[in-house]
Length: 396
Ligand SMILES: Cc1cc2nc3c(=O)[nH]c(=O)nc-3n(C[C@H](O)[C@H](O)[C@H](O)COP(=O)(O)OP(=O)(O)OC[C@H]3O[C@@H](n4cnc5c(N)ncnc54)[C@H](O)[C@@H]3O)c2cc1C
Image 1 (cartoon, rainbow, N blue to C red):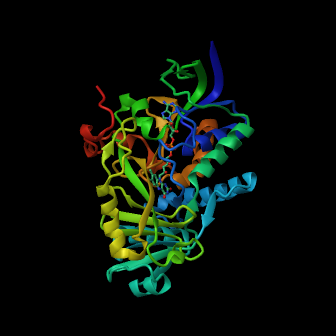
Image 2: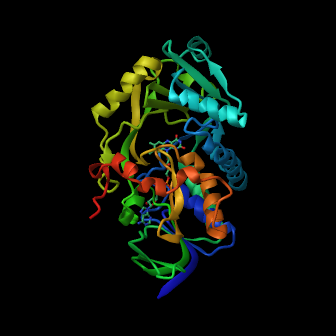
Image 3: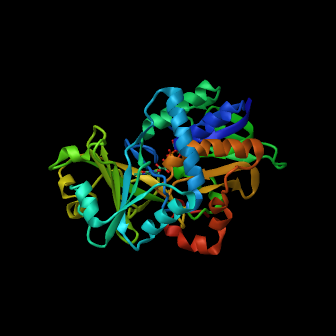
């Protein structure tokens, strides 16, 4: 027997839970599937906190999406009464002539966003536990803060179900097939065949495999998260005293820390992880993982370099230019490919649901998504940027 719907969502993590929620609120008949039961610890959306920041270093074209995503996180909090986001202010610290600092300034100037620039002395005076070097400067974003990913994913799932979505957990999509005329798509799971007019892939690290014929030049990067007990001045790391601080300590090499929200201070390197396969990801945290991070903490935030409380392994799904993929499938206009990651996509998951709902119901988004198209990933240059040995799947 084939069960029909208006739209099927494959993957119900950060972006899929939000997509299911917004699609169901539009009155569409939505069926969503997930291999597991989000929120879980096997994808990209776990680990207690995700940074949100407004003056976006990655490009001013993110800012309109960013302004809307803040509104939608607030709306989700109001509707559910759950703390999904906490604004603490946040610091981005790096070389004053570096790309990151320039990107923040560009976004702030273009959209008239408030930021404050601090010299190394000013950083240390205001936050005595931070020890920048003389070439660094900080931009303080007063709207920086944290999202709580497990709470946020659960809130979107609850809202999707409330709006009528049929969500099926522990039920992976095994196969999918478009019909020749492009009027519908079928998916197969262990419980049967499901058919919908449109299909949305929000499968995170498993997306490249699900659309393997496209040979998307995307790769999965292992990332390790740590929680530390500061060895001194523990109060300085509480959210009321200091928000996030991200450090670009060398061009292209960064680490970041979030305040202690109760589990210890979360710290991690950003990128610099091994290429991995999501199904065989190495989840054992090694002494080398820890020492690489401790080296940077000792240099820039020595009071933080205390007892290790816990750790966890997570995955980035990267594109060569580190921008998102938000587009229709190049061969099927009724299929959406949604992969906002490269290590900075969580904050956009609230707006991503609205974007998906617009693309499904109106064929287009009100935002300019031209930087996030699939065609750029299919060029020879992009393909070369991700050699086959880095890909999680060898496509034959
Ligand atoms: C360590 C770490 C730190 C990060 N820090 C930040 C940050 O500070 N700020 C920020 O904005 N972003 C951050 N990110 C990025 C952000 O977390 C990700 O962009 C986001 O979580 C990706 O969400 P997703 O929905 O694409 O994937 P996921 O949430 O992993 O969801 C994908 C889902 O698809 C399911 N699935 C897969 N295959 C199938 C199938 N065949 N059938 C059915 N279901 C399937 C999986 O089970 C999974 O539940 C970070 C990421 C990591 C790993």
